[in-house]
Image 1 (cartoon, rainbow, N blue to C red):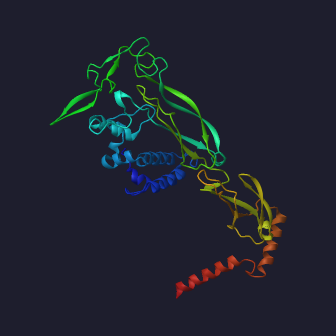
Image 2 (cartoon, rainbow, N blue to C red; image 1 turned 90 degrees about the vertical axis):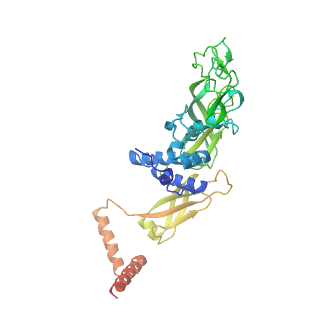
Image 3 (cartoon, rainbow, N blue to C red; image 1 turned 90 degrees about the horizontal axis):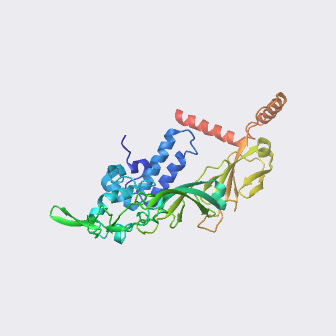
Length: 380
């Protein structure tokens, strides 16, 4: 089954800015997130599709490859294959062309002299509760990655053995390749630019110098983070090759839906159920906040949908000093499971109100007048 165009998946134009691209992705991620759509396979597929599209289009290099070559430019199956620990579509494109033209334009950013390679960066999604995002937390995560082999310390050679000059490139690390009228140099495919090959491969890593391991890290989440924020852990990515530095780990934060509150930047909102008598006569109720319960005074004749603002009861953003507010929307609760006597009293009360017409129900009177005007206009 062919993939949909990444721009169509996110519902954006091909000229979309990075900021609008992020907004479009966050909107789809929140709508189709598996936590909000349990057992919904279609929503899960939409979430994964949007995530894949955003990972490509949010990276300038991958986006350029996709714009020029489509899915073939960022798909490892098109010829470059995946890398250990999860594929990187942008690197797949670079692997196809980088070795041929790298020596002309100075080489890839991940490759150093003598076949020294920087380790790959890793990405990890960390799901947080709203309270953890607001107040901060330390969360332990398990990260599978490539680490330096303990037996050979990353050299790939068995203990007691050494290395010899590569026979294919005679130790130069590069080979000369004729391309029509041009003769160019590219990285030697045998020694991968190192100029040396091991005499006896290390049995612990089969000569690769790296092994698959899972490490546990304590991620410190600062207070006030939000959905889509990212934490960089320097040097916690995959181990480098031939003495190269390790990559970095990027922890992308996701905030689980909360049973009471919804977050909108620095502000919070919630629905406040109020009994009929309290809404009509006024009173005080206890409502929850992230700091504990507070008392909210309900004025007499409060209507459903009325919004109350509690200043300073929202969130202090990680990149700001002003605390947001909490907005509570009133939802008048209709009583249920009434006894016969209770039903009789409510009917008597309703009959008493009806004696005064619509004087006690201004919204109903306004609605009826609007309906009357509507039909008068139709008949005129």
